[in-house]
Length: 288
Image 1 (tube, one colour):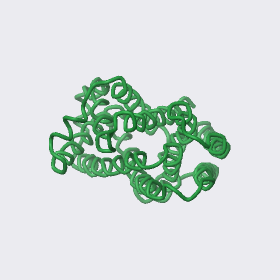
Image 2: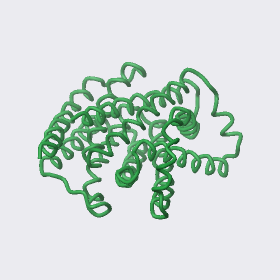
Image 3: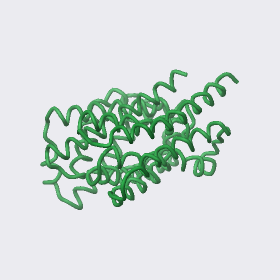
Image 4: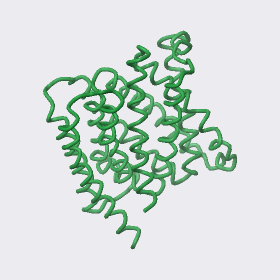
């Protein structure tokens, strides 16, 4: 049951990191590319202790390395779309669409890694996804581009989450999560250098309270993510992590001053019902 709490903590830290990313773009007048550079560059120093396990390197065969690289490319694309959506739309609106990830994982997971989900677990996943869509349906028809970008990001993320689940059962999850972030950051920097040039990278990397806070929250989100996903089925873990949509509504109000707090929060209660059902499902599986 401890990993149930870790997954929910990951949801809070993810939401906190997202809101700080939005705050960084607004306050520093930066775009999503700069936010991505800062978000990933400043996370790396906090992950150094977890990449020092040399014995884990021996477990990386050619298939594992290929999955590492393929997933890292998808991760960069998903992260860019994620932050671009945040740049365009309100955080408490755009982030709700990430909740479709748990709904997509049960479709891909049996095909890719052979995971199966109990009826109660699937119902919980569906409730979380429906509740998140209900949040967005309560809004007027704006931010459509933001929603489309976030839905695309969520779709890609459902695939990388499954790959991450598979690899973190073969390799120490913290070693995998940390080296995966280093590889993804390297791929991201190469792509940005090719597209925008080195000046874009230089102008984005400036130490401040916001960038350090963004690095800390993102690092903690990465660590708790891979700790939880190594112990819980990918669909369940990501569904629990997607309680971040609830936390994002609260934090967006407190930190960014976004409106429509009560209407968005009222719909998020539906999401907590889904979390409860998933918690029961996980507890039952552990008891067996």
